[in-house]
Image 1 (cartoon, rainbow, N blue to C red):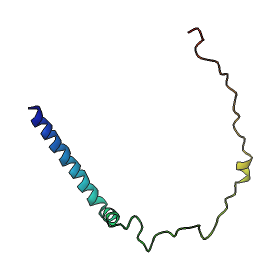
Image 2: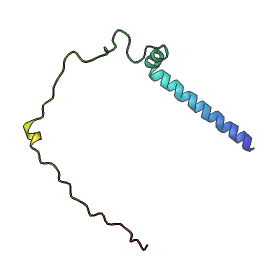
Image 3: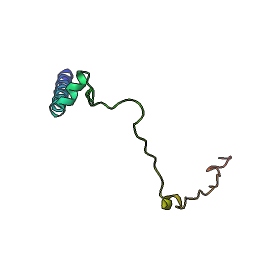
Length: 86
């Protein structure tokens, strides 16, 4: 009886797994098939070029941000929670 219940449980789990896989294929068919064919996320023509970017942008901090007060760390007292006798 336990073996029949285990076999039924396995069949239900396999059916649920197959349903999830088919639902994923239906939703993302193009992306999954292109990944399986080796194209990846970017087709070869639209892929980003390797190497440094052609233009470099330097970021500047605003003066208000630079002059903002920083939080001060307070030195905590490091006493043991238990005494040595405990």
